[in-house]
Structures are given as C-alpha cells and as structure tokens.
Image (cartoon, rainbow, N blue to C red; front, side):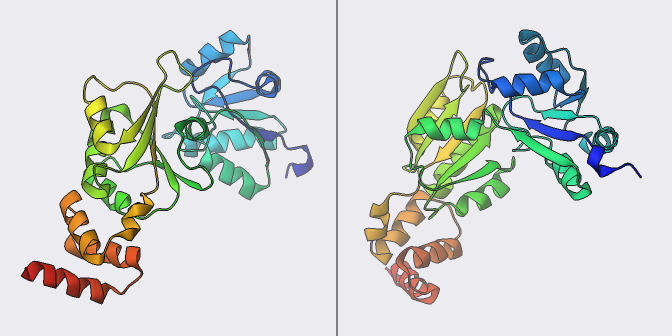
Length: 281
C-alpha cells in the first residue's frame, strides 16, 4: 500500500464566471504547478489557459464521466501527483461536477484544498439589493413544472432570500410557475451574464419580470433571487389570506389552508372552518 503521507492534493480552484480578469494570483499559480487539471469542458478551459499561458495538461471531468474519471484521478493522487479541479465557471462542486470526487477523496483520506474565488451565487446576491442577513442557495429548480411548483410552495413563507440558478430557455416557464404559486407581486431579482459585456440585473415583481424577459430571447447564465414575502401579508385576517391565495395562486385548497394556518399561527382545522364559511357565502 502506498504511504498516505506522500499522497498528492486535490485543489478545488474557482475560475472566472465571465471576465477573465476575475481570477486570483494563487489560482493561476496552482493551475501552473499541479501535475494535471481536471476540467468540466477542456475546450472551454483552454481559453483561460491560453490567456494566462498555463500549459498544464488537461483532462475532462464532467457529470457523465465523473464516477469513472474519479477512480483515475484518485489513483494519480495516491501516487503523489497533484490535481486541480475546475468547472466551466465559478467554484467547482457547487451545482457543478466535482462533489462526488471531493466526497470520495475525503473518504479515502486524500487532502482536498480549496482555492476560493468567483461564485455566481455570491456575486448576484451582493448586487441584487435584497436582504442578505440570511439567505439559502437551492441550485437549479426541477425542469418539469409540477416538480418545480412543489419546490416553490416551500417558499411561500420563506423568511430568507432564496438564490437559484436557471437555464435561459426555462426562465419564462419558471416565472409563470412563480406567479402561479407565489403570486404575481412576489419581489425578485434576476442577474444575467454576470461580469460579461451584456451584464443585466432586473429587480421588480414576478409579473413585471415575465413581461420584461418575454420581449426578447433570453440568453446567458441566469441567477434568480426570490425576496422574502412582504411582512404586510401577516397583517391580513384569515379570511383575507384565504381569498388572496385563492386569487393569486392555483394551489390546491389543502395547501392554501396549511399555508394560511402557518402564517397566522393557528390550527389547520380553524382555517378549514373559515374556508367552509367562505364557500358557503
């Protein structure tokens, strides 16, 4: 068995999300010094390497070959070689390939060292003007509407800013689901093409966002941030809350009852009785 004391290190290296100048001096040094760089797309990473005259060998490590390629990379690490892991943009293993490799290296006792840098999540949050004292990152929403709406239901009374990634071709459908579940007035921000030439930040209601992004074909990488619901909602009566959610969403009645009960801190049976009274009207 090879002595673990001579094993190499897996470096998790953050790379620019757009502007090639957004890379640390340490990241450039590490990428030049390691024996091999595992990249999500070697063709994409070659542009960065050419820009900074990095001639370290590249190998691919992406979603569909990570399990098999991980065995190969771990073998190199156990032989004492050093490997850097990079994604197409931002920090590897965060809604990007690499998490499985990191987990396996940790389980095997191989040293893993982060080389911090750009993150689309943090960059968007820092510029959006939404509450940042508490936030959660939920990555990509499901591609199918039904599954996506079930996730969105969890944000009806989420008190933290929610940061999401979304594909440009799914943005409009996601906004329609947000309107259906969270209401057309839900405040949000959408950051597009961060640090690039056509960088854009939209802030406003969900319905205004749908109108804005319906004007032209949506392009580029998307970060979607959902603001917490307005506190004024909690000043409603139970009847007003029921009527508002029935009007603004197409949630099942049992889900609406559950949400109203949570909003007002009362039992579901009390809200159910109120819903029957309204129905009787």
